[in-house]
Image (tube, rainbow, N blue to C red; front, side, top):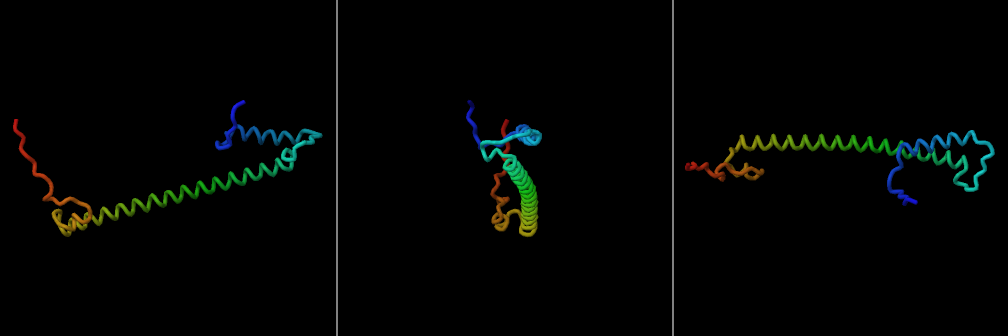
Length: 119
């Protein structure tokens, strides 16, 4: 017998078959379960709990996607603002200034001059 792990989600096909089985149970006459968790009332309650939790999960996923989109937009706005600031500093103080070096640029005078290659 295969090992049953409850860490994975059940396939949608399996859950659909389970719901169909529960709906089919309504046509069975004289069903008297030995186990209390297999009673029709408990099964209906379990179905309702599952549906409520699935709805809550879907709502939270939608909220997560919205928060992720908002965070991504804020990151891009911040990045574009920083790029604008860097352009303004280079325009105001020049590419060979200490101010340009302070914001992360390399001074223009620190680059090596191109050398002529001999053939």
